Length: 541
Image 1: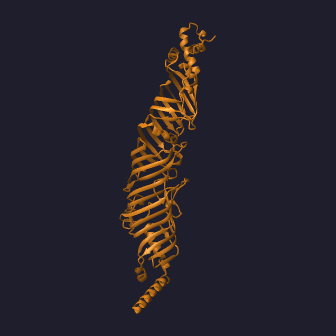
Image 2: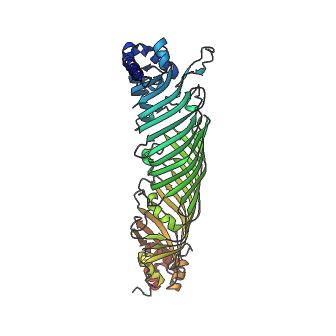
Image 3: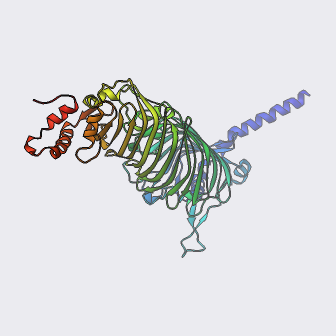
C-alpha cells in the first residue's frame, strides 16, 4: 500500500511540474497574430492585443491592453478598450497540435463607447459583418461564423452619446454582461446589469439574435427589464431643459423584431417635477404604459398611458418623433373627475403656485389637454374645469378690497368656496394664458375674464365681478351701464403667491357716466363721481 501511495505522489508531483513547465515551454505570444486575426474577422473591426500569458489550470490565454477599432465613419478613437481579455481555449489541441479553439471570452474592466449619428445609425451597427465575396456587385454582407460557449463583460463602463455633438454623454458604470452559447447566426440568452447615470441600477435579461448581418442595431431581442431609482434628469432619455426630473422604478418588457419594438410595463415615479420652476412632489405617480416604436422612422405611439396619482386617474396617448437631438410630442391628456385632494400635492411639481398659505381642498378637476412640440418647449392647450372645491387659507372677499363696498358688506371668510371654475388654458415656455375664465364663488358672485402668467409668475388679468347681494339697486345700475354687460371691472396683478386685486374705478365711472348721459339733457352737467357716490350712499357737493 505504501508503494502505491509513493507512486501516486510521484505522479502528482510530475503532473504539477508539467503544469508549471508547460506555460514556459509554449510560447503563447506566437498565437497573438491568430487571436487578433480571428477577433478582427469575427467583429469586422481591427483588434489589437498586448502580451499573452497561458494559464493551464483555467485553460485560458490572458491578453493585456485590448483595443477594438471604431467604425471609421465615427472617428479614430477605439470603440472598446479593456484592461485584459481572457480567452478560454481547448487545452489538448493547443498543447499537442498548437490549434487555438476558443471556448470563452471575458473582457475585464472594458470601456465601451456607443455613438449615434444624426441619421440614426449607431457606431456598433456594422459589428460582426463582412463583405460577401460571392456577391461583390450587390454590396451585401454576411454574418461571421464565430461562436463561443460564454461571453462575459466584467466591471465595464458604457459611454452613450451622439456623434459630433457637444452634448454630455451618459455614463453607465459597473456594467456586467453574461452571454451563453453565443453565435452570430442563432439566438442566445444574456443578462446585463449596470449602474445608471446619477444613481440607480438596471437589470435586463432575455434572448437576442441572430445578429442582423446588415445592421447589428436591428438585431431582434426579447427582454425583461427592471430599473430601480433611475434619475430621470440624468438618464439621457429626457432633455434636462424640459424641467422633467425625479426618480423612477420600471418593471416591464421590451421586445423588438429589428424594425419595430414594443415596451409594456409599469413605471413608478417619486419626487417628480414637470416644470423648470417646479419643486419635487411628495406624491407617488404610477404609469402603466404600452409603447410601439418604429425603429426605422425613429417614431412611436403611446397607445396606453394610464397615469394614477392616488385615486386620481388620467389617460395619456399620442405619438412622438425624433428630430435631431430632441423628441417632438403630439399627445392628448384625458383627465376626468380627478379628486382635488389627490392632485393638490402635485401642483408645485407642475410649477403651479397657489397664494401663499392657501391649500386646495376637495372637489374634482377635469381637463382635456393637447401636448404638442419638443419636450423642452412643450405647448399645452385645452379646457380645464374645477368644481365644488375650497381654497383654504385664502379670503377672496377681503382680497377684492374696495369691490366689497358694492356688495354692501365687508365679506370675510378664512376660506374661499368655489362652486365652479373653468377656463381655456395655454401653457408654453413664454408663459401661461387663460381665456374664458368663469369663476363662481357663492360668497361673492361670478367672476369672468382673461389674462396671463409670466414664466416668473407675474399676473396680468382683466376681470369683471358680478357681485351678489348688498346694494342690489346700485349693482343693477352698474350692470346696465356701458356695454350692457353686468359687473364691476378689476385687474389682478402681483404674483401667483401674492396676488393683488385692483378695482378699475375708471371703468366703473366711465360706464356710469355713459348711462347718466341718457338722463341729463346737458352732457356737461354729468358727473361720474356723483353717480359712484350715489351707489355708495353719498352725494358729491
